[in-house]
Amino acid sequence: TRRVTVRDIAAAKQRGEKWPMLTAYDAMTARVFDEAGIPVLLVGDSAAMVVYGYDSTIPVTVDDLIPLTAAVVRGSRRAMVVADLPFGSYQTGVPEALATASRFLKETGAHAVKLEGGRRVLPQAEAMVAAGIPVMGHLGLTPQSVNVFGGYRVQGRGESGEELMADAKALEAAGAFAVVLECVPEELAERVTTSLSIPTIGIGAGGSTDAQVLVWQDMAGLTEHTARFVKKFADLRTLLGDAAREFGSEVVGGAFPGPEHAYH
Ligand code: KIV
Ligand code: NA
Image 1 (tube, protein in one colour):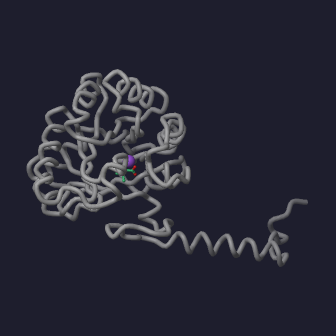
Image 2: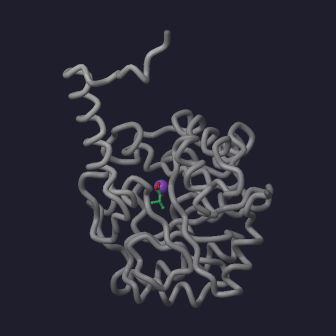
């Protein structure tokens, strides 16, 4: 088996095929999603919340994400693994961005990086592409800018939609191989998708994007509270809670371990 590459991603858009992306943060879930045929796994800085327990993506560091990204690469065989660059690791300038992206590729085996923002990070995106690092963009509700937005709210309504369109075109011109559109009106996402030759990956952006991404804990119903755009494809929160409760009561009641679990 060979890994999915940026060429496969580009070919899918040519053929008009939609595809799924999921986040992953450890080897075991990466293996499950890989075997389920998910072609692209994103080690999101959403790890700040779902792995590290912070209430935004701002605090998570490169050193926090490197081991998770390496684990996802080790756990998967076929998926392309995209490393999310955390807040503060690429905005400061081109040399810093190149150093961060290089660390992810060298130390984790990730195949591409993702960064938030459009024209404001264009020099970084261009330099990475020139250095041979595939770049995924991220526009709309970019959570690393939550303090500028004043909360997690829909972006790109009205005239700001033209700004987003210009950012998307700039990322494409810079050589980005795909762009995430988060929490934007469906009509805008559709216009961006038809205007670009690179694929758009939607999250809360309606059904017209070339691909869809969800945080896996949201997708599988492990997260307690989720946004309107999330569909829960399973109820892992109940399943896992029930399993833990059952384990607890069998230990307390003496039903576990049984004779079949013992060595003699
Ligand atoms: O960090 C993340 O999980 C993401 C996706 C939701 C696109 O950036
Ligand atoms: Na992210």
